[in-house]
Length: 261
Image (cartoon, rainbow, N blue to C red; front, side, top):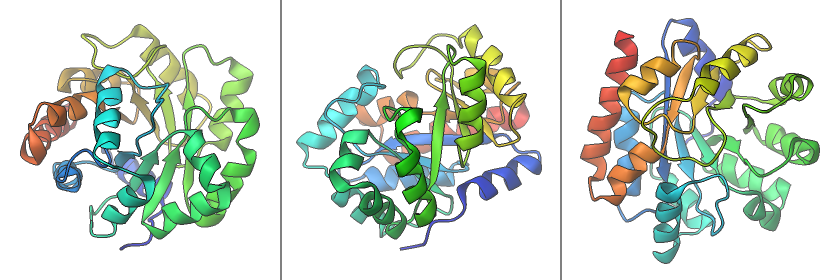
């Protein structure tokens, strides 16, 4: 088990060296080979990997990740089991947990933050925890060395966006469109507009997620952003039985596309 590396320092260093950032998402507990998939996407060129800790009511997620979460839960996935699985993983890049506040609350802020850190997690995304109520969690996470990544939406007003950028750590997560996660045929125009607004407010890494589904869309998002988060397109391949080799091949194609620009 490795101790968590500084997420923001890691991403800043890669960005400042001229690299566009790529963060794939893998649902934890999605079958016996889920850690193999995690290692495959890391080896394929990820700069960090987002690990979903399944919850029964994933309000931000669309059908693909909902299905993956339900399947993982049916297989007996638990937060403790998923984090325990990570003890045997050396991905070589930071890991970021994504889950919902009900699980954080049940653990307690202090215990959950320390548990993440103890299992090598460098950052956390809790999308249903409002900014006004997240101070206690942010403090406990920071004390444990876990960066709290906050999400900016297209409708976020300017004053709130400035506060969100100031309080987000690791990176700022730009939600490309209103609605839930899922594969899309095209990038929303709101992604570019919001990315530029965020970039005007912060020098922290700015990554676009929600609806980035193809290498071409990743390149488009990276025109303004420092990088992309690719979730449903990875998870769909796992649900369809593609396995570690298939998701590794897909992530490698995204990596190649954004490197070529």
